[in-house]
Amino acid sequence: MADLMVRKLLDSKAFSRSGIADFVLQRLTAMYLTIYTFIILGFFLTAGSLDHETFQAFFGSLLVKVLSSLALLATLCHAWVGIWTIMTDYMRPNHFGVERALDFLRPYVLVFFIAAMIAYLVWGLTLIW
Image 1: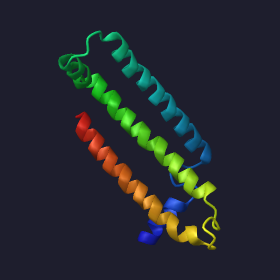
Image 2 (image 1 turned 60 degrees about the vertical axis):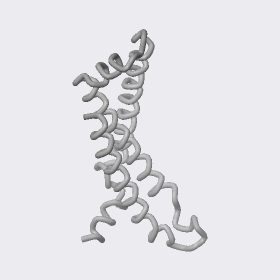
Image 3 (image 1 turned 90 degrees about the horizontal axis):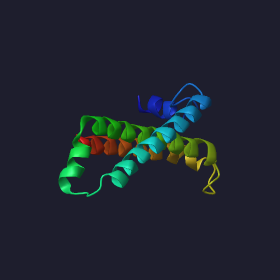
Image 4 (image 1 turned 30 degrees about the vertical axis):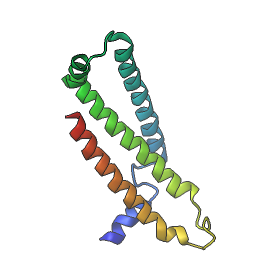
């Protein structure tokens, strides 16, 4: 079972069915995060006095909670594509001077990042909602 999971993680189609889809996903998440950043920046530039009630009313609204949750998911998808690409495309087998060393390390690093991203997702959604 664990061997199958590791093979799926290292498969060139682990996140989607093609590298093009991963490329498009990363670009779409980057565009969404840019738009979200401008929305938040717009709030800070137009809010006038930023007291606790104004801040809480803005971030407590349903729309901003949904947008923030989507931004969190977009960040995690964007990060996963980047991490997976670096781990599978740019870290070559002889990187550490030992042949096939990364074949041993790569699954553990990927599982670590998956666990961290799940923790960030749970923590972030807890903070937002």
